[in-house]
Length: 151
Image (tube, rainbow, N blue to C red; front, side, top):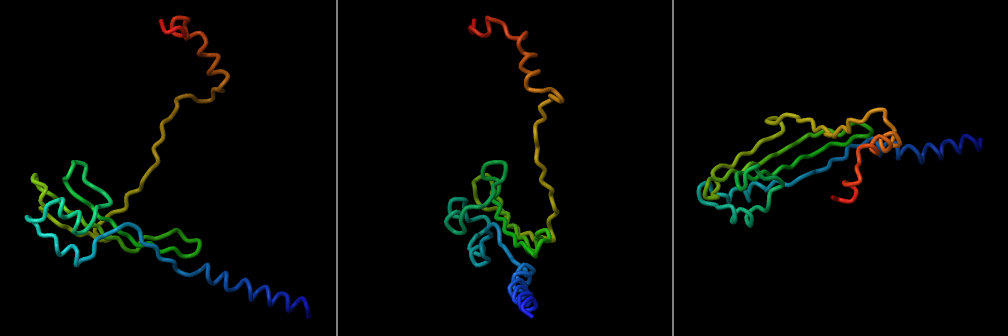
């Protein structure tokens, strides 16, 4: 009977942990200004310095200085051991003309975007199957005394 009670106690302790591990956890990333702040931005009137105080600095800027500001916010769903899933994305793109005055404000959602896979770029060394000793021994003949003395 004691073994049965121990199993019940262990199960009573473990079950809440299992249930808690299988709940949805939502995380927000990035910043997008609220609609009431964006309503203050007037196309053709608001300049870039005013925009900074109205809605804050962006998370990204265009390649050309002052060409556009991008505010990106997303919401992710984490559920147990499953891969996290992006469930909501909002991008606000604010473009400027040559005088740094707002020329366009666009809003995009997750349905407007496309998934872009980021890849890690590594530089290949070009040296394959050669040990460090062989590399050092191979460079002995290529170094002259003039190079060592900087002459």
